Every structure is written in structure tokens, then in C-alpha cells.
Length: 165
Length: 274
Image (tube, rainbow over all chains, first blue to last red; front, side, top):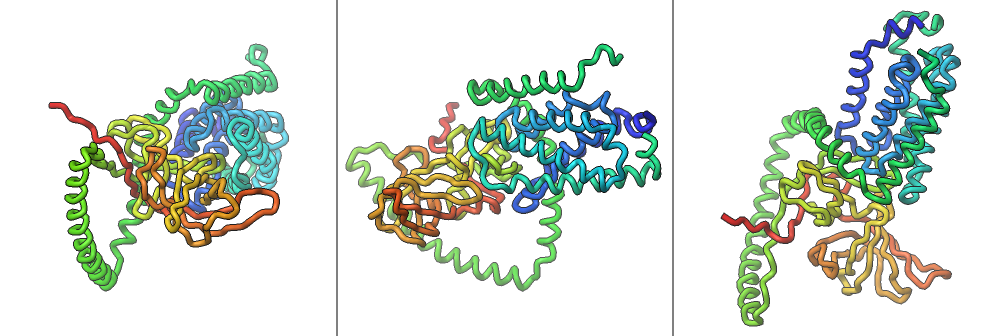
């Protein structure tokens, strides 16, 4: 578990998560809003993958409540979805850590999709049917963001990081 | 250490249970409004700070507007002002006449319209309801239910108020109803948001005189919106064999996605007692 000691100090974890929250506070609108990746979700799942002892269900739930506040939706909608995402990442963790950034992102795609479908389902049951399928766009952009982040991490820490894990 | 931890599946189930109870508490009992205002207090400074980059970009863009363009705009504004001055004189005359008539009829005069200027602070995803967050809240005298307008029409209705910000549900949001009348005929109806920046006019009998291009104004019968605010323009009217009602689609006139500055109409002016 040398990845843990290298990448995950509390300062770095909190820093990236706060950065993700701040990025979502930018006044996005129009197409940029529709295509905005879910920065917070990517951050949470990333740290769940690399630091499962520190960031997992609890943090995901609280940040999910924050996402619910942002969209003005029912409390619990994103929280439930994020928790499901964390579970899937923990379930597939050892498998995910073996892949290079591109393949890892490709495997994260169904997880992001499952999270978004959970948001859709809870919203549908609790409030009203969603308007259109535009809500599936962030799944794509989140996957791209994951790829970029994973690539950056690999460049940062040298090539063999994920192979040794 | 690992012996004390629950397995992931058990923890997932526990958190799902917590999540479901959150949903129920919020939908059924509206018990989590405190948490919402907590988040709003927490995020308010961050949002105000994060507005700066786009503002700076707009400033820089504005700096390079050409002199010629500004002159042209100034000329247009001068003409506009002259035209408005004439109508202001007319309006003053009408207001005087109106007060005289009202005193004659011994009617209570309507309370003066007080407005609060607000700017868009944040916009969330519009998957289930279309809402924007404004940078004015309870401290500026906003209440839940007040109408919000911009230069071209009705934007929506204040739905949640926090101390220093507030949430506005847009007219195009699903389930948001607006009582309207057709400007040309005076026919009253109910406009409902249908999401994705569109509205539909509900329960219009098949023989109604309405066509594409008609403007819809607020009718004022609900005592929420003042009468005569432009709401939408009819874009398509179609008849269906199965339903006794027309299917009337319309597009909101206000710049729901674009306008950054809006006015909140505070109907009753606050009484300041010395």
C-alpha cells in the first residue's frame, strides 16, 4: 500500500475536495452547465480508490447532500447516488488499480452512469419525472475528467505507480 | 483494526437507510430547511468569490468595445430617452387622473410597488426543477412567493429564502403554474412550465381563438403576480383528436438563461416606524 503513503496526506485530500466544491460554485450556465463534469463525485471516487480508509461512505454522503443543495433538489438524492458509487468503487477497487488511466476511465464510465441513474431514479420517485435525457451528459464529461486526473497523477508520480499497487 | 470495521455491503445499507430517511424527511415533513440554510451560509462567500473570474472576463471584454459602437449605442439611448420622456409625462398625467377617480370612488389606492434589485448568483442543474439562486435574501425583505421579473418579462417566483440569498423557481420549471391571459383576446388560462425552457398553456377549449405569435400576460387574478407582466409568446398551437383541449406551446419572454440582473417585486412596501 505504498500509494497511500505517497499520495494521500489529509491536506492533499481536503485541498482537492475543496477545489472541486469551489469549481462547482462558478456561475455555470447554458451548455457549460449541461456539460459540467461532476467535480465532487470524481474527487470522492478518486480518493475512495486510493485512500479507502480515509474517504469513503461518510464523506460521500455529506458531499452528496451539498450537491443536493446546489441543484435545489430533494436532500438525499445525490447522497444516495454517491454512496452507491463509493460502494461500486470499493467493490472493484483491486481490479481498477491494475489499469492504465485510459482503461481505468473506461471502467469508471459504468460507475458514473450508475450514479447518475440512481440520481434519476430517486428524483423520479420522490419529486417528478426529469426533463429530457440531458442529465446523462455529465457522465461523459466526468469520465473524461477522470482520465485527465489519472493521467496527471501518473505523470506526477512516475510511471510505475499503479503497477506496484 | 479491520476486525472492528463493518464490511462495505453493511455500510452501504446503513448509508442507504440514512439517505432514504433524508428524502422522506425532506419531501414529507420539510424537516431539513435548517440544513439548507446552513449550506447557503457556508457557500455564500465561496459563490461570491467565484463570481469574480467571470466578472473580470466581462470587464476585459467590455474594455475593448470599440468607441464607434459606444457612440452608436449612446445615440440610440438618447432617442429612446426622448421617447420615454413623452410616455413618462403621459403616465404622470394618467396617475393624477387615476388618483382623482379613485378618491371619487373612495377606493383604497393600491400599495406602491417596491422593487429589490438582485443579481443571479448561481444556477444548478435543471433536471428536475429549474431554479436560480439570487444574491439577495431575507435581509433585503424578500419573502417566499414574490414574483421576479427582468427587462423583458416574468422570470419566476421566489421559492426559498435564506438570510442573504434566495432561490427562484423559473416559470419554465415543471409544475410551476402561472395564471395568464392572451393579450389579443383577453382569454384567461393557466400556463405551466414543461422544462427545457418551454411552457404550455393548459386547459384551452378546442374552439379558443389563439394562434402562434400571441403574447401571454399575467392575468393578476391570483394576487401573486401583478396583472400585465409579459410571460410568454405562443409558438405552436395544435389540435388533437383524443383530447377536448388545444395543445398550446409557448416560449418564455424573459431571458431565463441569459439575464444576470433581475427585479423582485415586493408587493407591500415595508412600513418603517420611527
